[in-house]
Image (cartoon, rainbow, N blue to C red; front, top):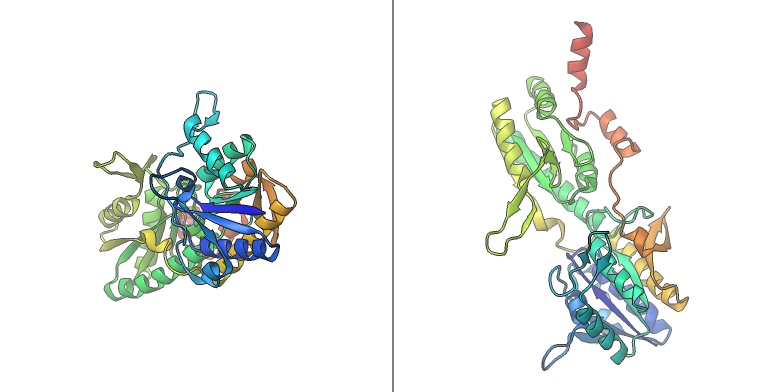
Length: 372
């Protein structure tokens, strides 16, 4: 049996763990594995060469500790999913035909796709064409798979952010500054929430909870006036500022993406508080480096489970983690967004710890009004 694997979209700690688990489980069954380079682009022919390689046990032995991906990846290219007026997704028929031709020519009996929401949609389109596809959800944002507890790569990103905040805190304390740390997450606040709690942030701003700058300023001034030297503000890139998304625009390619709220908020807080304020955008440090132990193990489990799904011919499905156990769900459900519920236990815990979300007056201000 010959099976394939590719990863698409942004890179993420733990991808190599998935590949290692997938190859190990396949070879234990006497199967062969072909790895496609640079995402779905690997399914397309190139002049004078090829975009894939045979993955054996020697090639993938102990790559679980490596960041990035040995197969390379891309979030651009020919596999752009189109959406029509009624919400139907589609791919260029010629691109689809070329991909199917490659899969058929190689004699693949299954293809595992490691990727985020966009990659899952592409995988679903391949499945609808009758191709034997398995999806493996991947994102540091933890914002996929309503049926899943975590996606691999998330814990590694949180570790990086929490460690960075610990370092930033010492310099903020030395200079009595407010420090604004902008983190990834797309339109979700999972990274900001987990890392903010872990690193004792004073303010955590997430897209799922609309904030008022006045409430943030009031909370900061309370702590400053009480003698606290440093103030740590963690803000997710997808937060609305005064009701609008903050984005950056690349004039060279016309791309508009999330980013810049840390800078904007920094200047706003300094203006309103009179306290020296700096900002730090952690950016792609959150994606890079070796995966943490949790993500290494989870990636290996996902890779092995994908092979088991292929063995059972459960195509058109996705691997998930639910209640600590690896299971399956449909590709549709796997690509559904998973956002922070403002009422969930983690948010409530953060509030009990005194973390400010900016959606209400700080506790001390409310008590003062009640006294009056």
